[in-house]
Length: 353
Ligand code: HEC
Ligand code: HEC
Image (cartoon, rainbow, N blue to C red; front, side, top):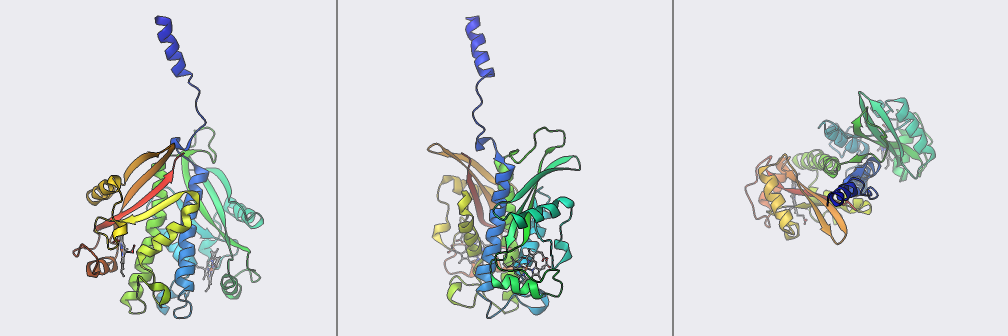
């Protein structure tokens, strides 16, 4: 009997550990891919569906505040990264270049400079490395930022501050750097496979989403509406209008899907009935974030053999515009939203294995 018990103990001690699955966490390299996908999705949505859509009526300009125009795509990204970086959640991101128009966007270390030089040569993957800083390990990844259209090239080549005047379409003009804190400096084997918990990765993804959403709502929609320059409309496509903040998020969501990353905007008081909670988890989550707005509502769920991680974060009325439009909308079931109220939730989900 004793031997038998001993065997069981041994069995549990030496149980073969399965190949590390995503259930244990998300490798830093994949976490950076997720974050980059969301940053890139916001950048593309803003460039293509806002700036290019309105090019003939309200061109974007560097002095957007003074000119009462749209901010440039690079300024949109840097404003969003400033908001996210200032939250102190650990992860940071920003746009930079070896040939910056704005010196704040120059590389800040020898490693950043080397990384940028690498992505200029090798455009098909990010350049990544691990580095100790102030007693901690950090994972850094630089993704190339490409001159996707003639407008990128023309504006940069002709700008008085540009150190480079021969950019061509398809060239790497700079890079987006993502910086993730890993473990303490004493930990061994810290590399791009270092596992971050799904909760932390969801916080990072959500921080980018919320920062983009804030910049779009505050510095694009609210500012231009208050100055009577542009309106945001549901049917913006055939008009000289801005897309709604909800549509901005939805567009970014569609663009981030390829990595298995999903997000949605939902609410207990939806204008669009499709945005109401789709199941008990979403209902419970929305009720929870309404009363505990600093804590996301989290679940691991199994569908067949796959495990998904889901988190609902509160969606806050950050501007008067949010409140006024919803309270005044004929299809809104709630007419008394106030500034800073939780209006709904942002659902972030990804597959764990
Ligand atoms: C109308 C002019 C204009 C257009 C169009 C434009 N940019 Fe820029 N870009 C700027 C300005 C001005 C800055 C500096 C913004 C700041 O103050 O941070 C900048 C910043 C950047 C940076 C950061 C490094 C730097 O130069 O400061 C990159 C990278 C970049 N742009 C790439 C692009 C790409 C890619 C496109 C096309 C998708 C593009 N830009 C379109 C004017 C433009
Ligand atoms: C100009 C009007 C307008 C503004 C401004 C606006 N919304 Fe909305 N919002 C809508 C409409 C219309 C929908 C439904 C979109 C759809 O068809 O999915 C929506 C959808 C939503 C949803 C999903 C639930 C629902 O009502 O369908 C949330 C949550 C939400 N908005 C919050 C906000 C917040 C927070 C802001 C400010 C950052 C904001 N909205 C700004 C009009 C607006």
